Image (cartoon, rainbow, N blue to C red; front, side, top):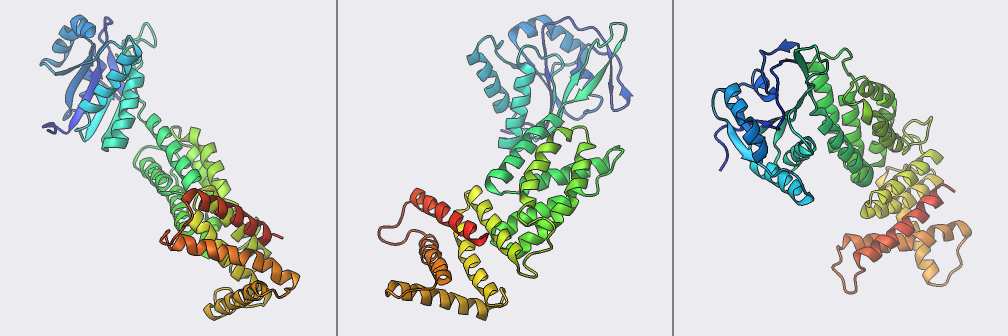
Length: 402
């Protein structure tokens, strides 16, 4: 059953003796309180309070909780964390108990031992698995100066973004999925414009659109469109990276971000306009790079389909034909099939014709095998087919560049 209040402020309670302090957050100072979670109620007044504590912490400081809140908040008891088994039990309890909430704020100021780390892990799981929005993970730096009676509160929730950036960039690199990166770029831009950032980003959303467009074009084998997005990405990547570096929470991911997107920018040769506008050696180099990219992310069907079309494209170029003209491409496909028939009939081919035929027959057979989805007798296994595609598509890529 979902909670009556979909929002909760989760405060961890320890066993220390807490002195009353003022707390500082967002330029505001709270009245003195012994608990940071009580001070945070000033900023999240409509959130239900849940105190997480061990039996020892409840025995030591529950009276403090009652005094500070002037009512009895909900209590969630957890093990002490004195063993590995108990640590995993704490994480399980946190993720299970708070999975029904829509919004959570966590105060880890008074958490002890591994509790802050477990709270962070739980927040990540709740966000990923249950779509719980984490509105803050707060830590009050109590007694930074012995003579001070106030403590600044820091929001550590942006650390969760580091995990999400890592996951999104990994997904882009390994699988070619750009949605995660685009979402984070858009979120970073919106946050900067809605806050008090000194530098307002102007390229992040544009870059997100370029990355998404490139990812989609590659997934659907649209090399000319992909090249346009590469050129757009290349032109704005330096400025976008600087904008990321200017935002403190995102600065650590900027180098990884730049390196990941720089690899995509190499799909089009340097100092080149869109190579599909005026076909040249750069056109073939781009096709080779895109084939290798497909293989690198395990997109074998894309790689073999693009390999087939690359063979036709090169033959069109050699005959000075429009590489986008349907009739011209059909004519070149007919030429390739005719050469293949002659070879099978025992006829001798010229060296150039032989170089095409050596690839064309195998590419067509494997492409057809994939397109028929295994609905044939003695169909190749997935692993066997992947190995054959990787070998053959790499041969095609090498051949395109020589």
